Length: 198
Image 1: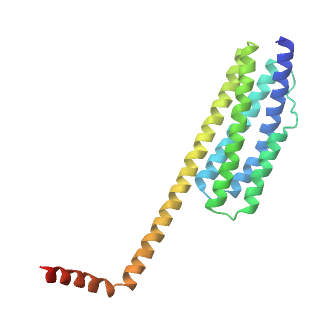
Image 2: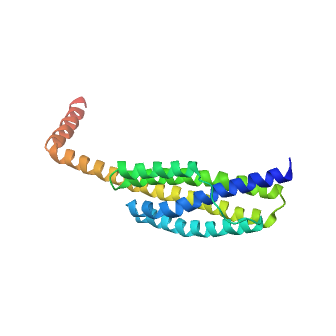
Image 3: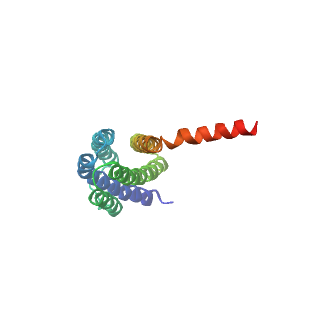
């Protein structure tokens, strides 16, 4: 493959992900505010800080290829953010909305992981070791953010299960209390039938 053509592809992909990250910098504060779980809000705020650093890192990569940092509208990220916003509007604040936010955020992470993986691979082909290293750092951060979101989701699922168990226990107690007078008779009749059979 023509080295020049590959570098053009690299720059095009770089511009795309640069715009994607800048869209995220604007979108993440809204997601953090919409979250009910403090763990989720904190994970989003933490990733916002990382995303701002990732924008700076991409600007370094632009410098390594001798170009000014300039984005190209990333339609994929725009669509993913719109989907996330729909989830916020459609669900009331609480566990379901939090899980919808996580689902949307993980789609974003998976998109970014693949974008950075591709960019890193092209940088390696172009023997741009420093750029490849910077892109690898970001790819690793995106994977960690995805794992963190999974952890938060499991915590939310866990608290939901605990609530279900508490409700089940309450129902069982109510049933036992309501049928309390019947239960001893049933035991007595069973013990009486055992005596009769002897």
